[in-house]
Image 1: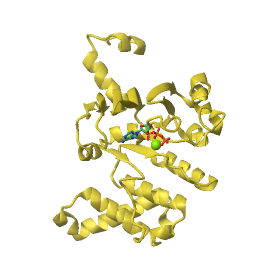
Image 2: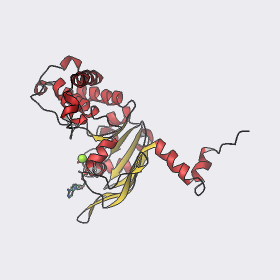
Image 3: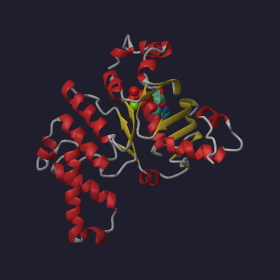
Image 4: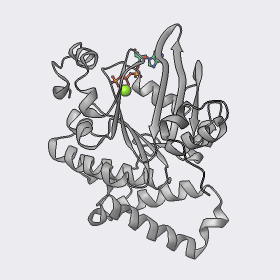
Length: 282
Ligand SMILES: Nc1ncnc2c1ncn2[C@@H]1O[C@H](COP(=O)(O)OP(=O)(O)OP(=O)(O)O)[C@@H](O)[C@H]1O
Ligand SMILES: [Mg+2]
């Protein structure tokens, strides 16, 4: 005899008896959840009671006008800043009070910042250095010959993943801008992120580089989850599964691009900037 299974909408409304089951189902579907997350700077509310859910495997875009609180929100997730109120749940664990290093070890990694690259090392050396950082400081562990060999192999594989194999022995300082960003992506991947946070990954790029980095983000998103701040709506509409719009620290819209881009409040929020329509946001 098979027990009849409740339809999804019933499961979601059956609060009391199934709450634990419900919580664990939710943490499987959503890798990250913030509840009432708030950051005040001397009374100024930069992030205002944000309830955000990021679905596992998604590329989730966080957009909003300048000063909306996007970077501050990222800084809360990486523990660079301490929230004034609210909580952060990652993989079902409340990580609100954890230290930045603990959060990074759990797999929340921000790119284009902690993974800064060294200009006078080669591309391959930079990726190896990132892998060594990830191994920690145990000298005895990685001095072993086979560990070094493994590092080398892994570094080559990461370069291939971001289409940089042909640049392996090039000095990083000589790389074109878009390729440097690809290298930064590789050094982030070296940290084995489960959730990657990208803050304006295509900023300052020409069309060609924007396209290349966009495709790269799509490619490396396989098997991972990405939360990205992005001003370029072409990028957002082409790769984001879901979009959350922040304005003055608070969420004003959340959903797929087609829906969010039609939202009058969102259009108005963007008209407050130099852009006259959402499509034209730089
Ligand atoms: N350390 C701080 N102390 C005081 N105010 C801050 C601090 N950090 C950020 N702010 C303020 O919080 C607000 C949100 O800033 P934030 O950098 O998060 O915006 P953003 O959405 O990332 O903007 P942009 O699109 O320009 O990058 C701004 O008004 C900013 O001046
Ligand atoms: Mg910002």
